[in-house]
Length: 255
Image (cartoon, rainbow, N blue to C red):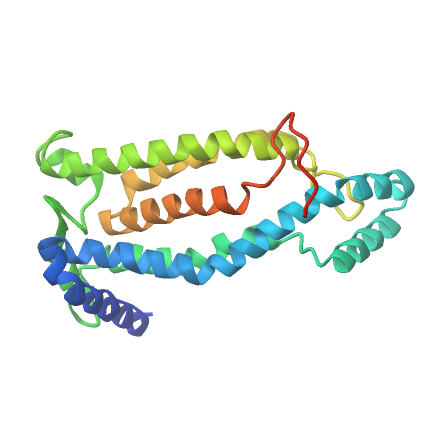
């Protein structure tokens, strides 16, 4: 782990050195944003596959309902029929989870990199970098303790909170529309929903606001990663799902 952290620290430091002529004291923060964009660009093919899977599941909803009607009392037959349908249509039920899972290691690396005072047996020099008046290794509580909410560091966090709140509101509205039109996904082997899945589905749009909590408790460097990644996700989903059916609108036939 220490070797990996050292390599990651060298990567961020190298990016910061390249960006220093443009961003000066904010070069490390700019390096984190650039690194996040590179991670999301690498994960983008998985996001596209996830979007194709979601659209395919919406298209297959009538067939899934018919399978439930025919094999609802035979779990084994139902499971086999669903697997055959997904294989025939080249749809993976897990494709929606892949983009989030793929970028988790990068987030944890960023979190640990700016949570440790030493890296590879030496001092962590990245902790000396800042975004305006806010050190990248500090948290919101540190900003509140040194200058308060409207101090130099506090204003940096207020700006991040404002960005996250705007993105979360946008995501919340679009997700509600998508969930209203998405087919109920079978979770059990017989195609029936797991008890409580309906309540969980209703709560999903609200999860976009959980990023506000994350930004408030992790080091500022990790918060920058989260804010950049969350904003990227909102924009990416807008373009990938813009042709999904909207409530009350019948989509035009595909060309």
